[in-house]
Image 1 (tube, one colour):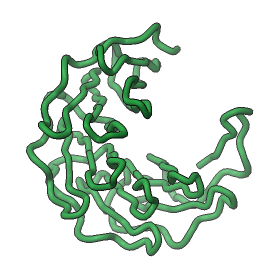
Image 2 (tube, one colour; image 1 turned 90 degrees about the horizontal axis):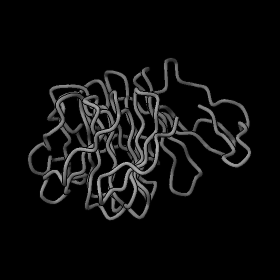
Image 3 (spheres, rainbow, N blue to C red; image 1 turned 90 degrees about the vertical axis):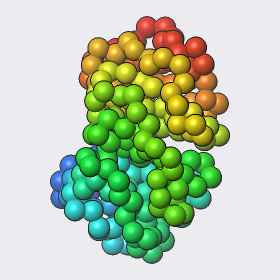
Image 4 (cartoon, rainbow, N blue to C red; image 1 turned 120 degrees about the vertical axis):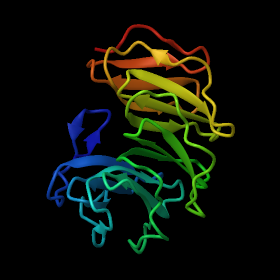
Length: 232
C-alpha cells in the first residue's frame, strides 16, 4: 500500500507492507488518520497513516479474498466483503467482528459502500444484483436491485443516502432510488467495456466512472449524460 502527496505527485514514506497476497481494496477514515486494507490473503488490516505501521492484529474471518472494504463516517466500524459471499462488520477499535456475517448472495460480493449515517450498507455482486442491508440488524432491506446483466463491480452512494450508483461488467452505470429500489432513468452507456469503478461527488451532481476500455468518464448525474470527452 502506498500513500501519495496529491499536490506533488510523490510517494510519502515507505510502502506499507504486511499482506501476503495482492491488496484488493483500501479505504481511509474521515479524519485521514487510518487506512483499512482488504487482501487476497483473506485478511483486513488497519494502518496508521503517519507512521505507516499496522495497528493491532489483522482482522480474520473471511474464508476467501477480501474484495472491498469501507469505514463508517465516525470511524468506529469497518465493513468488508469478499469471495466467500459474505459481508462482515467489524469494531475498528477491538478488531472483532460484530454479529454474524451478512449472507444472502450465491456469488462473490465485489463492492460495498456505507451510508453517511452508518445505518445502511450497499453491496454489489457477481450475481448481477445490488442489495441494501440494515447495518444494525444485518438483514437485507427489500428485494435485490436488478437490471444489470453481468457482475456488479462497484457501488457508491450519495451523501444524503437517497441514490445508489452501480457499475457493471455489462458496460453500464445505473442509478437507483434507495427507498424504492427502482432504477432512475436509463443506464449510462458510453464505456466500451466493463465498468470497474464508480464514485459520486459530494453534492451528488456528478458521477465519475472507470472501465476496461482504459478510460475515465464524468457524467451529469441528473441528465444521465457524459460531460465532455473521456479522460484517456
